[in-house]
Image 1 (cartoon, one colour):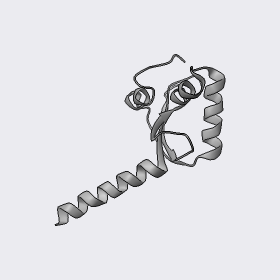
Image 2 (cartoon, helix red, strand yellow):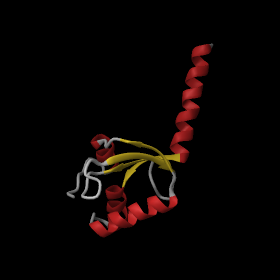
Image 3 (cartoon, one colour):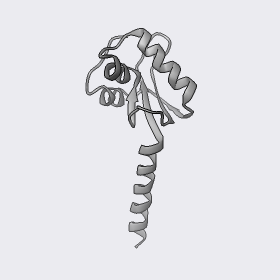
Length: 103
């Protein structure tokens, strides 16, 4: 019985996380040479695992510096950072569908 309660608790936490939290991967670029992965509060039109490059590719059809800056500005202005973690290339590539974009 105790095992089922633990499974139910983990399931509820996972559903909660996917609805209210975003894992945002920031690729290493000039201003952030080591990159960063941050947990932020969920924004409109942002996936559970996302990145500035993935958002630019979806919305603009490509990735460029002005679009990255605009996405970073929106995230910095509207989201609350819950946790900062080291960069994860796996999460970045998951967000972009396996594509990588140059700095």
